[in-house]
Amino acid sequence: MAVPKKKTSKARRDKRRATHAISAPRVQVCPNCRQPKLAHRMCPNCKTYRGREVEPLRIQAP
Image 1 (cartoon, rainbow, N blue to C red):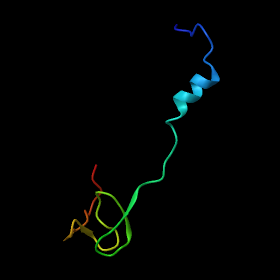
Image 2 (cartoon, one colour):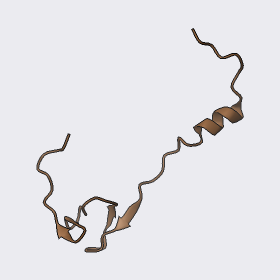
Image 3 (tube, rainbow, N blue to C red):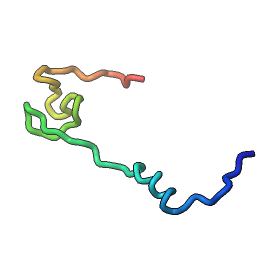
Image 4 (tube, helix red, strand yellow):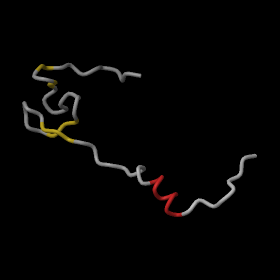
């Protein structure tokens, strides 16, 4: 079984974990209704995407 030869230092361990932080989602403003929405998704308020009305899916996509 593989066993480390030396103890991993706190600095090396913490440098590896520095990228594990959770960030808040990027929110943009809908150009149609000025409500916040996620990028590259239809607006949940006015149901538009890139200036066109979009009908949401009736079932969840897999």
